[in-house]
Image (cartoon, rainbow, N blue to C red; front, side, top):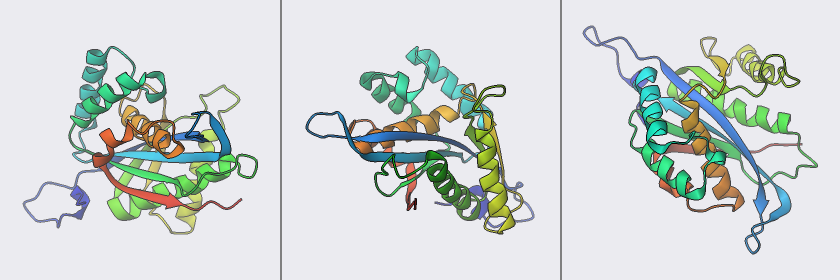
Length: 227
């Protein structure tokens, strides 16, 4: 895929567009294909990034709000019935100027042997590195996991710790930055839908949703996580 950052700059060309990425994650246990119940064989962890190609995040936000008005439901994957999931994914597919990227564990991880913090750090590390080195993204917005004043308010700092470590090691550039936003950031709904549908597909909960949007995924990267 060629991003605006991959074009050769010329004297009469407009300035490069700053690329933004919106990141969300989904963690789900593997299901028994015979019963549909949790199998107890581990969990899949998926991080999805929606990269806005045109730089016009305002326009995409407006289109997402229009979709929500048409659907009449919040566009959060887990809150939608399978029928509504399919409809919302079709509407999301109609929105241009974004590409999806997936970063996921390469196998189900037993919950007793792996901490979520460790797994997330590994997968987020790969996402940050790809977004910076391969795509030239300058700013990644992640859904907050701990609102200020709650017991989980320190969780977002763990993402910053990953960022600072990668920058100290010169794995990603000093210009790459991250921030966190709550569900009022409309574009996070795209990454929520990508992550939710992908984790459903991986764990065997649903094989219907992800194929409806898989053609908008530019790459899928598997991450090996050690205990």
